[in-house]
Image 1 (cartoon, helix red, strand yellow):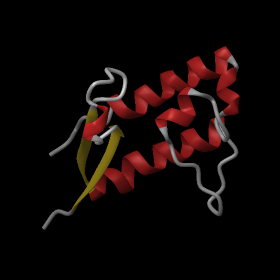
Image 2 (cartoon, helix red, strand yellow; image 1 turned 30 degrees about the horizontal axis):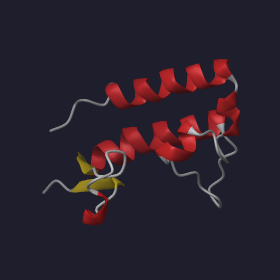
Image 3 (cartoon, one colour; image 1 turned 180 degrees about the vertical axis):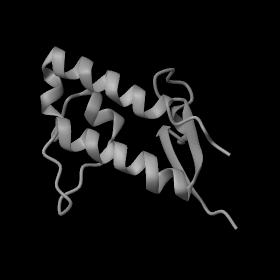
Image 4 (cartoon, helix red, strand yellow; image 1 turned 45 degrees about the vertical axis):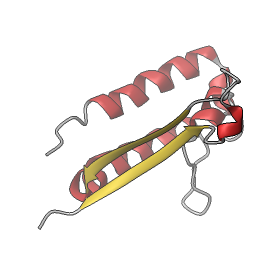
Length: 104
């Protein structure tokens, strides 16, 4: 029997008191389900290569991709302050994501 992994993330504000503020009234919950084989054999190795190529990634102190820190170029993503580095990272990240469309 095939096994799957589900990744879920939220963004925004679930506080109903903020509904009058157009910048804070939305909440989004997004998820993706992948086969464990896809994660183990494709996605995980590709993300680890990407991390070690652009950042000081180490197994004892793993880098976790958080959109907010990436966008704001906060540690450990300071290298993205360089435009050429950022453009190359974006290109390679999109390649990893979009070539993995062979989902069951």
